[in-house]
Structure formats: C-alpha cells, structure tokens
Image (cartoon, rainbow, N blue to C red; front, side):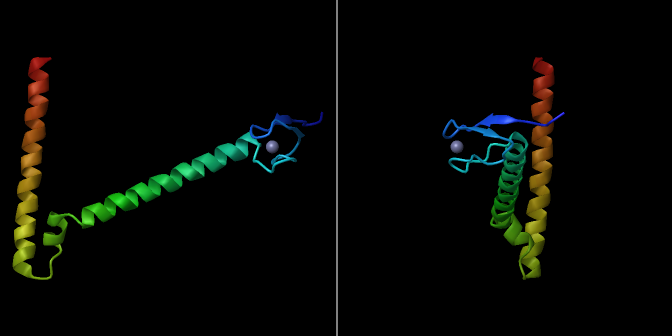
Length: 103
Ligand SMILES: [Zn+2]
C-alpha cells in the first residue's frame, strides 16, 4: 500500500503529489506541518503576551514602591499592597454576594 497524497495549494491552485511544499510557488501545503507551525506561532504570541504583562506589572506604582531601595518607601509599598489585596478580596466577596442574592 502506498501512502500517496495529493494536496492542492491554497495560494496558486497547483496539485502536488507527496510534497510538503508547493512545487510552483513554494507555499507550505502539508496539513500537519501547517498545524505545527500554527501551534508554534500561538505559543510565541502567548509568550510575548506574558512578557508584556510582566513589563506592565513592573512599571506599576505598587511594584516600584515594593522594590524601592529605601526601606521606608518599601514598607509603605508593602502596606499599600496589603490594603489593596484586602480591598479587592472584600470587593469580590461583595460582588459574589450580590450575584448570589439576586439569582
Ligand atoms: Zn502554490
């Protein structure tokens, strides 16, 4: 049994036999290779997104305060961060409570 595959190129419409790349225009036509390429592209995009989020977090005021070289500003930053976390926890609890009561 031969493993013959004929794939039509999406870019130029040429039919190719057992080829990963189009014989006319060089476009990638192997579906599994295209899938792998897309997954890699998505992973790369996700990594860039995470990096961007980290840069944004490092540029935030609270992060700068908490990592300041002067101890007093670091202490103030830590206290502000703690207050922020508590406020967010209470706020999300109230939001959950409101959603539960109204449902
Ligand atoms: Zn082609």
